[in-house]
Length: 162
Image (cartoon, rainbow, N blue to C red; front, side, top):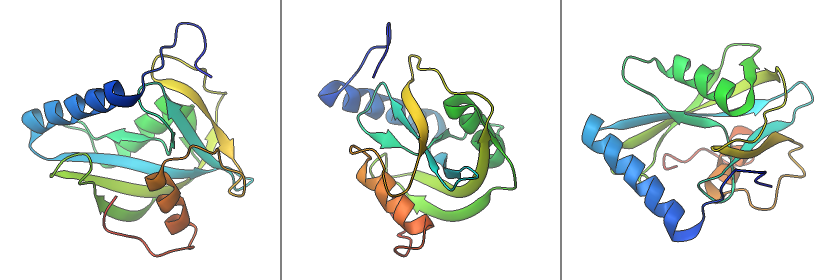
């Protein structure tokens, strides 16, 4: 579901866009740092997003900008990608090396309880979003996202690699 005026980008083009962004930030910063979160609502469902520019479902998150704390970045990304507010302090679950993005990328992965202030409408960045029961996740969840969900729910030990 992409909605009117929301372009779908896939395949080689989407990989090129992601590659360009990571290399642009590499040249500007040297090392990149990101935040992602397993966001659970009161019913124990997990929040996920599907972007317009890469295939699959992901946990919300994004890059930490200059002069921004990791928690500020986390709060911003949850608000922007899902209209989510944290109902308690986020718990840092693990730190990952994301060699798939670049040789210098790390991701801080949090577990957090959230409430959604209103449903997130699709736009140029987010095609779809929503809460999902852990037993019925969407079919095209990315492999890294599935690994993080299994880790944060105790089904397998955390890896150091994203």
